[in-house]
Image (tube, rainbow, N blue to C red; front, side, top):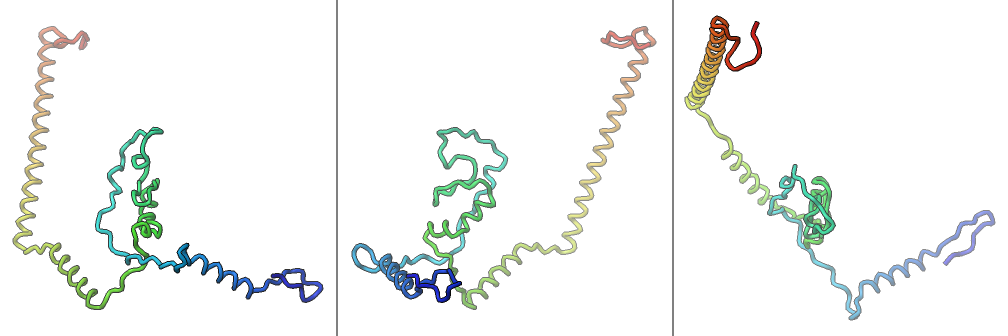
Length: 198
């Protein structure tokens, strides 16, 4: 194990590296062998693949939940992972968890990604290009001008409505002032109020 020091001033222990290497190898072989005596078969995991569901981060946003001692863990505050049976307190850590090694292993996947061939990459580019072309709406000049005219007409109609509303309010205020003047001439200070106007 430890050999004596080479010089008198060197007090550090010197370890026999070969002996410890042999012990480590022996321990590893024992761990690999099961009770049956057969060597353990390494677990074959799937390659990492794209998630086929949308992660729900916004359903509990802005909502208040009463939590008691009897509340199940899945309904407690935070985000619950049913694969790993754990609760994560915020959305960033939840995303880190579901993209992490522990969660992926529990799903039966390794962290290795399948290598794509050149043909697969070209096909993916073509698909994405078609999607982009479908999304872009091509306007011809006449159609665009028609839309602009409609927007202008809506804006004019809105302004006219506002002006009419202002006129109505002004007329109501004027009528109310005339009623006050008439009441003062007739000798009352106002209709239904106990305060005096003078």
